Length: 141
Image (cartoon, rainbow, N blue to C red):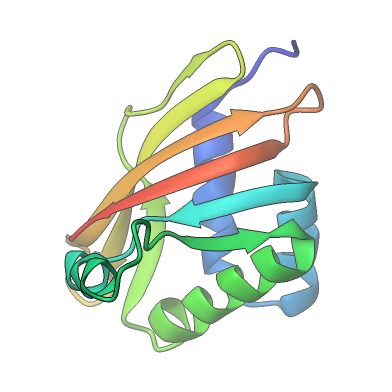
């Protein structure tokens, strides 16, 4: 297993969500995730409750492969960063690596105040090449 610099991965991860240029964003997605990488988002509580009410045991939102990952990142960029309202960053010294697992916290920072307005926990597994294979996102709003 290649040595994983958890802080570097966390910083690159946060940066991809802030990237304005679609070509650079696509390259960053390809550099960060394996071609068959998966991003699994734990949706907000109200969405999970509605899914359970409708008979779904799991309301996780999933993006698979570079095209879906790029679309997920681009949509997030358009909704939060392009508006000038937020930017994303890795949170403090919260990153840690153990074998092929990396965890870190991230923050959504209000551009106007510079204060964290939200954030979450990321739990990722990485391959031999250091790219993300599975990415579990737990937003904490």
